[in-house]
Length: 120
Image 1: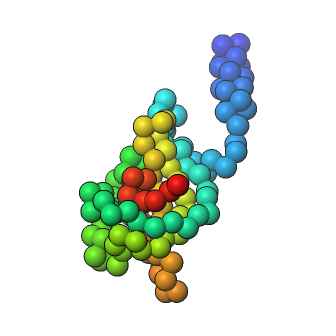
Image 2 (image 1 turned 90 degrees about the horizontal axis):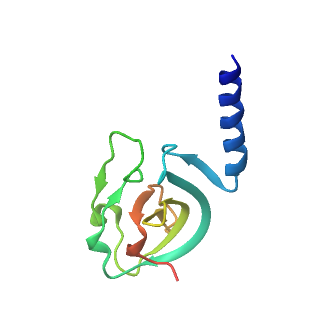
């Protein structure tokens, strides 16, 4: 009984020190877990955009059916303005952004690797 109580207190202490910040969720509790952050930014797509995929979910997430979309279907190309509403990272190695076209009737959101966007 004592070991169980200490284990629960240890987990509660770890959760308390992790902080909440703007993190929305974690894909896993392992080191290098994917973390999501709300952001509001407008940017453009780089010329090298065709080297990267557009997906309906962040690629390293726990979603089982991740679909890939063509840039043409999304009606996005180099220089297109996009809004970013969500970012995800996995340690310091990966950064993904959820983008949406800035056109009046744009409804679809896509995840893309950060190197396809002009973020500076």
